[in-house]
Length: 298
Image 1: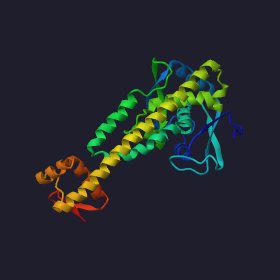
Image 2 (image 1 turned 90 degrees about the vertical axis):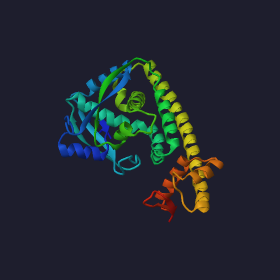
Image 3 (image 1 turned 120 degrees about the vertical axis):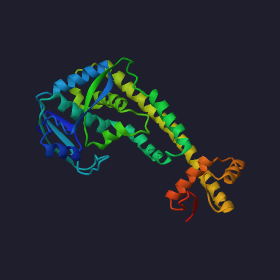
């Protein structure tokens, strides 16, 4: 795979195509490159900078796979390689390192992509509690590589959905900074590109242990959040089922109807739960809402 390139980065095809169209494969792209900031422990800052210096003035190439979409590629398909050019900018090296490590090592983030379905529950009273739980986990989720951190710039292409999602997806205990820490440590431990750096074995072992501990945390948090989701779904299913009783009894559902509110309270439900259930059934095409805000069967 190396061909004649001194360095070979993983870069998805659609990202390559953007830089090719701008003629900026080995240049700074003021329209495409976006600067953000992450907090890294001192040792990761140092070896990251050493890697940038190592890449300077070297002929770089890229690779990706023939079978791909915007989320992932099939590593069992054929490999495509191409030339980036000689790297003479740390920002360009920074950009390609970010793409390389996020796409190769951020698969743990896939664990939380499924939480996106919780956006459908955003008008549910339970949603705020769930979001608080996610944020609480996020407040304590970090790599165990020391408490002293330094802010450094990271350059990311605007056209990378995986990176953009990490930065913008709200229902997620992982921040981009935390994921970058993990991926960078993983890169130094496992990647052939990093093997040229004289990182002490003791430090590599420290990175390896920190990555393993972090992966265990992610697994535990994922299980806890899925348990919370299942509880919310169960409550919603129960409210939807009871709403059928309301429709049988009254022939309609109106969120501010006092008679229905009393009837619901007698059976352990409140109007907020039933209102949300009615909205879900409306989206499913089972109820319709009149101009007066009354829900009736379709």
